[in-house]
Every structure is written in structure tokens, then in C-alpha cells.
Length: 315
Ligand code: ADP
Image 1 (cartoon, rainbow, N blue to C red):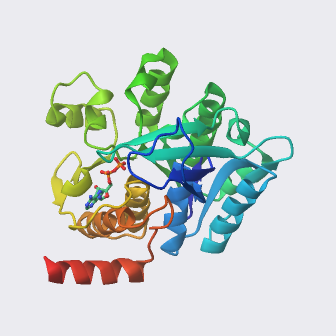
Image 2 (tube, rainbow, N blue to C red):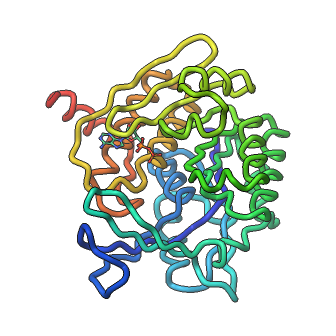
């Protein structure tokens, strides 16, 4: 079976309990939850029974061990998670505005995450990797961008494939080096997984169709656009396929895109068709938003089959 590896931040997430709660006054919080976009992604891969691992760094503290034990328990190879004796595990405090939008207080760059490097264990894990996944949120320092570039070279050198989910904020694009890093990721990626509005951020195009054509022309073999409650769409040079969404009540959107991407990539590496991969990925994203906590909605194939069966009947 093919092995999937990712590299990036591992965090704990601590959430405000009530909608509209402020962080400028004391309030009730819930957590810590295991988190970090690459960690959520790889946990979802493991839940589907696919061999996988993550290159990262945590502190030698309860937050770090909570993540390591959670990932290991779900089947992720944690051998390349460095436990840094002098650093503290990264964190994200999240609160929900009345309209459901999220506000974060992050401590990533100045946490153990800032010390992710190409260790011997990382090189070993990457040497056995068939597919490498990158999250835009992991491109938070020039140091980590260099490590990611090295990882891509190792995996591509061994004939592996690469996927890239930009999950990027507009402000990041104002840094010239960041735009260059994103263009590098696009140049090497086989599967590009943007959310609807992100598709245009990386091109000069005014409309989605032109942006998609521009990105395919750059050499990206396939694009899967995530459209929240509207499902997702696949594009390659020859065709496009739309995957319909599953109607659910959204409780917590965190992790939907990560679980979607993990499920899509895993299905494709298992040789499943685009249509089947989109169906499972849409189910995976939809199921995630019905659970509170970033990693709590990750699903097994049995859970996805049950979800699809019950929702298709309901539709
Ligand atoms: P991201 O978190 O990367 O912006 P999306 O919000 O588009 O990604 O979510 C990823 C996928 O999860 C969507 O393409 C869809 O399949 C599923 N999804 C997300 N939100 C919902 C929702 N409210 N109802 C049904 N499916 C959803």
C-alpha cells in the first residue's frame, strides 16, 4: 500500500464555548484538542487505513504528548515528530463570531513548530513516501519553506506525487517570497486542492474558469475545488466532474477541508475513480462539520459508507 507523508505544524486548539464570545474578557473554554492542518489531514488518512506519517516538532509537554499519542493511536507513523526539550507546543485559541466566522489567536512560528527541520528520522520517513501533501498554513517561515522544498525533492526524486492545499490568507501574498514559494508548490504539485475563492488568488485571472485553465497550463495534473456546502469539482486537461454535497447541519467547520483532502488523496492513491473519490471526500468533509473539535470528525471507510447510505436515503 502506498505511504502518504505530510510536514507541518502540530498544535493544540482551545475553543470558546459560546458563539459571539470575546477573547477580551474571561470566558469558558473547551480543549485542548489535537490540531494543526497537516495533523488533521494525516489523522484522516490513518483512519482510512492508509500507511502514513508526519514530519513535525512539538514541545516535551502535555500538549505535545496529547498530539503524539492521539496520532499514534489512530495509526500515524510519529517517528519523525521531534520532541524539542526547550520549546513549547504550538497552540490556537479559536472563537466563533455570531455569523459563524472564526477568529484565531495563534502561537505557531514562535513555538516548537518553528523548529521543524530535516532530521534523520524525517529523511527516513520521506525515503519511503509515495505521496507528499503540503498545507499552505505550513509555509509560515522561510526556514520551513526550505525544509518543504527539500522534502518535495526527495519524494519527486523517488517517483512520488505531491498534493497542495493552499489554505492561505490574502495577506500572505503581499510578501514577495511567499508568492514565489506558492508558485514553487504549484510547479511541483500533481493534485491542487484550493477552496473556491483561493483559486483566483494565485493567478491574474478574473474568473474561475480562466484561473483553472492557467493553473492546468502550469503543469498541475488535476485540480479539486472545495465548495463548502456546495460540494466540490474536479478538473483536468480533458474533463470536469462535480461531486454533490451531503446536506448536514454545520456545528464546527474546522477540519472540513483537511479531511476532504485526505480522503480524496487516499482514494485516488488506492486507484478509486475521480467520482468515487469525490463522493467519499464530500462525505468526509460533511461529516467533519457535524462534530465539534478539529480532528474529532475524522472518519473510517465504514463510517463514511454508513454516512453516505443514510444521507442518500434522506435526500
Ligand atoms: P476549506 O475548509 O478548505 O475551506 P470547505 O469549507 O470547502 O474547505 O470544505 C471542504 C469540503 O467539506 C467541501 O467541499 C464539502 O464537501 C464539505 N463541506 C464543508 N462544509 C459543508 C457543509 N456545511 N455541508 C456539507 N458539506 C460540507
